[in-house]
Image (cartoon, rainbow, N blue to C red; front, side, top):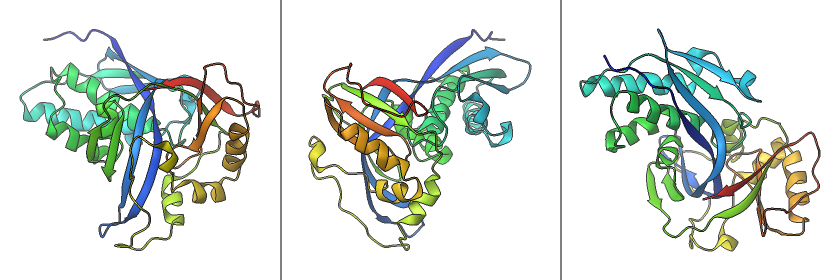
Length: 279
């Protein structure tokens, strides 16, 4: 029997540089058009041999995770086992140490990134390295953002997350992430749009190279639910050296794109902040 050699995978923060809501589909899901990039920092998953599957949370936000049965990593474990079985492979039990460095429910894809890294790791343990169509579809079944997190490169993401187009020549961006440590419910934000099934909303991205034409349609309802998001954006936009400031995903994390790595906004010390490079 193969032995499990411990290894670690980064689950980088996923940043929506643009998030246009095109409308609500007849199946109830929202049709999106988004530009996505990834930070060079995030959560870290370490896989070690074990007698039975388990998740051990560590890190500054490790205490905020749901029980094992409700954890998105456990869902990835279940799906990886099903894929392995269909391909005649064996998935050995492991314990996953999750170093949770990103705030929970913060609009930067922490859960989806964890699920994608977990799925990659579990499939590697089963001797499956290629991310084919079956695996990408399985990722979509876990969460809409898992396929783009599996891709792990700057992409244009459309539909509910199933249509991905890699952005060639994407230049790295110096960025600062700021979160007030206020959880914002993604379903509540989408619900605040008040869209009926089949109802249209906004326009698609017309130029995927021109940030001046990008927007986040979830920012206004998120600010209503958590006004501190507006305060963060005002502070970032008033900072010398900040080229653009916006909210990522459904919030509450805000992003400042900076001219140089040493840009220093005036922030409340109670807020979470992380300097990173988006690529």
